[in-house]
Image (cartoon, rainbow, N blue to C red; front, top):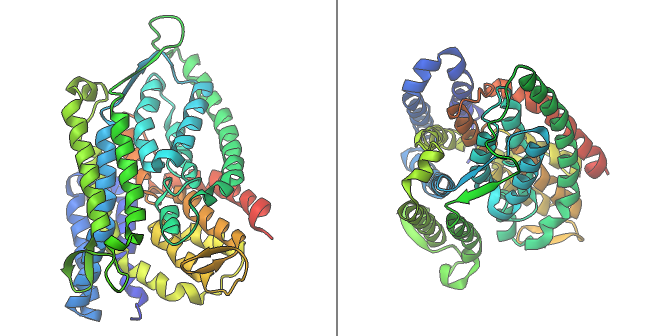
Length: 449
């Protein structure tokens, strides 16, 4: 089916609502955003039904809800619950050196437990250790840049696009080839961060603000450490969801994934169902086995996950026409070079879900007829093209709050803890000023030839 461009208008309206609502009418937005989200979503479904029929509109909507949004929000919910039951306590106070250490640890963890898992685990300690400071929004912006995005590039566990690549034949360990790109970006971003943080740190100290350190030395204790097992349980569920579809027991005779039939061609696959059950079980066990006092120490509330759940159901539904249009025109764009793949994959991943964007251009690269490179289910893909597509999808998710799942969650938790984060467009000023030049360096060093 051919998708008319005007069907993307509700998606544009949804993005503008997220961007401008908190700026133009903050109080009204906080009380009524769910109605605006519902309005844009219903408009998308109705317009799609007018063009393609009620049955087709229902299929697209249900496919989005069951096979995109449901697994997304359950993963985020599980990580939010488990990380909320882990508390750091100690006299390690936020300083430029300490913050560089925290950002580095969080970035490395992202490839081991995923960008969402690392973000949810590290965001509260970072906020807590810097609670004495007044100038710290830049810290959380760099946290999003690095922990919520950059760090997920080394393994298929790190970010969903790479998991999809693994499911289509990209070797599990292949992502380690992206370490030079990650290292270069870490050096650039940490250097910029250090000088910014040192400036703001000195301004806070000059105004008489000092961390509350009750005793000498450096101590750091971890409460609720048994919840690390539940984090591992969630990571295992995500990995299983990528492996099980290729297991014969989970395949129909025609090779499709077995599952629960929902409507028309929509099936909720058994691997996704198993993933959701394991994640929800981990969240439940986490709450049953962790004292409530730990959540009180973390100032745990449900408002952050509630806001993300409301906004992203609207984003997921309204962006379906844009994703279908991308699948239609992607192979016709004439993209053949690493530079082109890096920028177009990254630019679209900044506003659309980076997983289907990655898959579109992975498939496009597989149709170019290469004879050397990485052999995948979609064809042989030249190494440089695969590197460019992977880096574009993972790195440039940091360009906007909606570019990757944990970005908005970190923003919401920061606001909730008294950190005044920039608006949607205010954040993009930071990303354009810092990330875009960094990506130009990436292009010149790795993707220009």
